[in-house]
Figure (cartoon, rainbow, N blue to C red):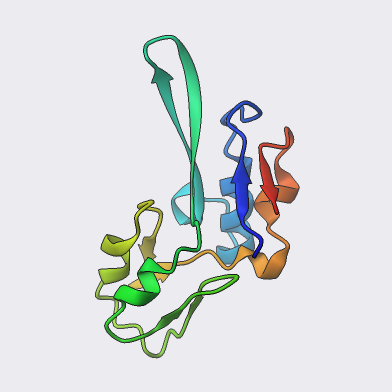
Length: 129
């Protein structure tokens, strides 16, 4: 199964991946509405480094959902009609990547196998393999 791979050595923290994600899924450029993110930190006080926050398709959210509104596999899928907005999936995510928008979770669907975050990254920090 293909997954997103991140290379922190190539990341410059530009957040283009998050901007493209939100534009693709929500029709607007808003990092807060993206299914991927980049966090910055200082590694032991030395240099500024970046860490990706993205879905690893582990399925923890799907297993935790009391309504069985989420299915997991090569991508996550939400049955919006079953979702009650209880946010159990948010708490179950080990990467803490799931955000809520209009009482529905923002889930990574890997753009149906052609992730825009990978395509837009100018430095090759993201791969889909």
